[in-house]
Amino acid sequence: MKNIKRDNTPNQRRQKAPPAFIPWRFGVICGFVVLALGALIARAAYIQVLDPGKLIQEGDMRSLRVKALPSARGIISDRNGEPLAVSVPVQAVWADPVQIFKNGGLAQVDRWHALADVLGLDRKALLNRLEQNQSRRFIYLQRQVSPAMAAYVNKLKLPGIGLKDESRRFYPSGEVSAHLIGVTGIDSHGLEGVERTYDGWLTGEPGRRTVRKDRYGRVVENISLKQREPGKPLSLSIDQRLQAVAYRAVKQAVADYQATSATVIMADVRTGEILAMVNAPSYNPNNRDQLQSFRMRNRSITDAMEPGSTIKPFVILAALENGVADENTIIDTGNGLMQIGGSRVRDVSQVGKADLAQILKKSSNIGVSKLSLAMPVDAVLGMYSGVGLGDASGINLIGEAQGFFPDRRRWSDFERATLSFGYGISTTPIQLLRAYATLGGMGVNRPLSILKTEQVIPGRQVASVENTRKLLNMLETVTQKGGSAFRAGVPGYRVGAKTGTAKKAVAGGYSDEYIAMTAGLAPISNPRLAMVVVVNEPQGDKYYGGLVAAPIFAEVMESALQILNIPPDAGTREELKVVSHRGKTHAGT
Image 1: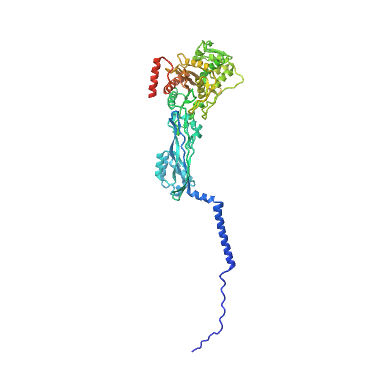
Image 2: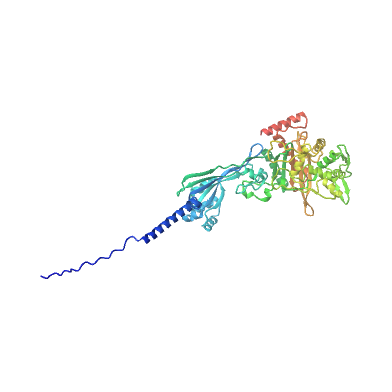
């Protein structure tokens, strides 16, 4: 048995393991932890306290939504409350190309073609427009679509296609009052007429609703609500019944005489309110295809013309005011031809020796020329200016022309003569209306107004009541048998009117085209209405004011007197009863 040899050598000492805790490392780690914690605290403090706006903005961009609440534009109505312009709710169709191409793009071509068809757009043009704007988030496809069209678009359920509430202007009177009311643009701001002049008054303040939505588009919080303020209503001075009568007359006149245009404008002489203002040709403001410049021009305020013989009453009034003549003064017009220097003044018909009433009745150029030459030129021009010729009418519509009012140091006798029968100056129909309204106001010149007035605007006395009354009595004879405005008379009423025919001025002289005019008042016993009729470039043999414009004056004036229930002031008692009965019957129908 072998002996096992034991090693009696003592155990060697084992090496100690390095210590688990090393202070300097622990210090480093703690330092980094403290620094990281400090950095986090500093960052949190910076974000939460010093600059919280950026992240709040980022969050709000993802969750906050602001919905505009469009405000309705103010209603425009006539003096009797009849609406002339109202706002109706419509919608705009818009697209989000990013969302469209994120959800399949234009793969479903039939549905996109259906969208183009209902919006009246070219199919290919619509698809190309979307493809060319793939990075945009909002583009309009069509504005102011009807509720029925909007409902159809909604049923198509196309991704990235939305609807936005809007309002659209609707004009119940259509082309009848288009020139006066005007029209608005696609953004509901006025472009023409009353819509533009009073745009600030008619435009309301849109509202705004701010909400917070979740990822599914559900409203989780109402943040704020700003109430919308509707536009203020506007009541005009015009009477839509008179507008319709006047427009029918001018439209018929343009067709009958193949004229370039025709205008009728009427005012209440007591207040200066415009009761009717129409032009033909006109346009339908509800149809944007008719928005052409020659149709949209309000010729009653924009077109200046030489007034012709319609200005003669003011020469006679100036003569009365300056003591040059009275109602009994006799003027010798000779054989109808008067030589002034190297030029001649002619009368259409021989008048011979005549008083002022006969001079006016026969529209003698020689008679008024002699009156003008007997006065300083400043007396004639002063009277023209006093009654409102050459000045703004006061209605404040944008686009009103001022006409031409001469200012010379030296005047030849022939120029002074032609000045008396309406050549050498130019006025607009609205200015001529103001001048005749001054006569109806017994010499009081007050500004005209397109707005319904609660109180009469004070005017300025530019001629004596006595001389104005004398002139009105003379003016009445012009519509009687043998007068140049005989066709302007109205049965049962005392009417004073003056016709005029003027050649159209062109560069270097006058053209072969004429302007036919009639201006006047009714009833003469107590003037209530002043009216001006202008027919521009009537064709054919009839182009004189007495043949073309006077019948229109009579037609519209007769209807206006009956519609407004103004009692007749002429004729025998039996005749007045018949006319009064006719007026009541007309008003009832």
